[in-house]
Image (cartoon, rainbow, N blue to C red; front, side, top):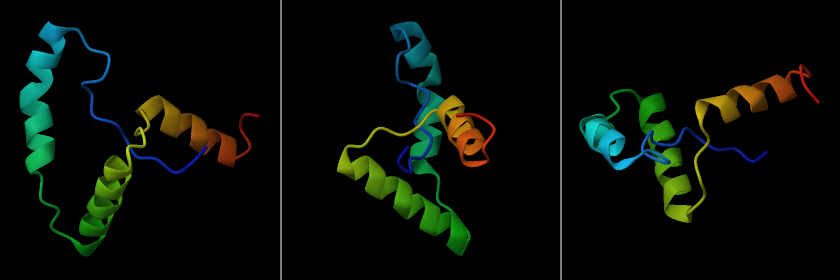
Length: 73
């Protein structure tokens, strides 16, 4: 798998769920990292989004980590 970051929780939600998640998503958009590492990670995330590549879900991230550790084939 390629390197991807977590996707926003709005994908695949019904309209009512998406509306209730909107404040959370707006908070994520307005987040400003305070540390150099956080700023670097945010730039990487923005680059991935700008490229059009889909971001991974938590489940996909956990599967990729397990695969890299040899826990699954």
